[in-house]
Length: 431
Image 1 (cartoon, rainbow, N blue to C red):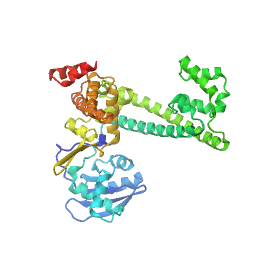
Image 2 (cartoon, one colour):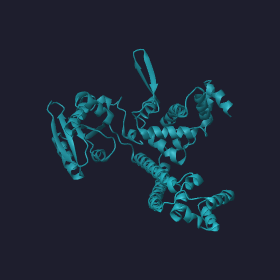
Image 3 (cartoon, rainbow, N blue to C red):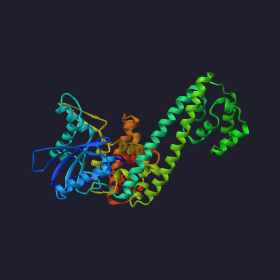
Image 4 (tube, helix red, strand yellow):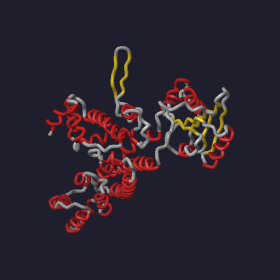
């Protein structure tokens, strides 16, 4: 989850399944190397299977017939992706994703040369699923409605990241031959700036435009402040070209036109996904919980819904979500020394979702603002203070999620007052 966590199921209270065999598959682009060991045997079999669905179907059918449909534990080095999607439709295959870092560390420990080859990786994965299965979490797909939201918000984020990357490239080109654009408008990836550059890609072309044409253009693109429009028109008229080397300028203009087109396509794609996300989220039975959170809005509410999912048995307590999301810090110790540091091994998208929303909640929630300011006064930097706030928020959301109730700021403030929390005074002081 937003990614990866949404397919995972806590297995602490689940009875141990009696597997007929253990299977490990090392993913590749065209063919997958596999290693298999029957439950009551020490012998291992190895082979390859083609990536095409027909080949996988035939191979799984053979396994099903061989083991009479009994469950098989399967280790793969991914929790999402083409291979997992292919295998997840077969009920007898119980998939256990293995973090790549775990395999890499075992490879370093057992093979000192550091050489990587597919059969060795398949054997390592087989060792893990056979001997250390309790350290892994079996994939358990959420409801179709939830999975739709999870996939949509993840893909939207990828498009947003790509749009940001393209905007940065565009700005880098503009700073060479047209540096006034970033200065005048700030966000060079906005629809207005892209439309302007598409029509007038150079300062010389822009200065040839009549003032009335520019006024009409700015108003068409939702710039309503007359003073801002007039100041921009004046700045355009007084600007000087940064570069007169036509060889460079013409090349940059050609590249800028391509970047503008890419950004416009990405923008349209993001807007299209926004509509799909809104539709899917509003139809979800749990959406009201996350929609009630301060500052969540149309973007973050679906992402928080995707983070928690629908399976209440997935997390036994809030601590599990705090840890798995990467919001909880890591405490390490050696001898008499101990230290706390940022958690790296986690779903980055999941951590990002909680972090971004916690920052938004500071301006929308009285106690959240007071709590953040309290952390800052204690010496924490901005992001550390936001993570501390997200850590506290997860406990609150977890309770709402478990009990299927919407968040109510007044109810929480009353609970703080009932328990004589120091946040009560801090909240009043912040008003």
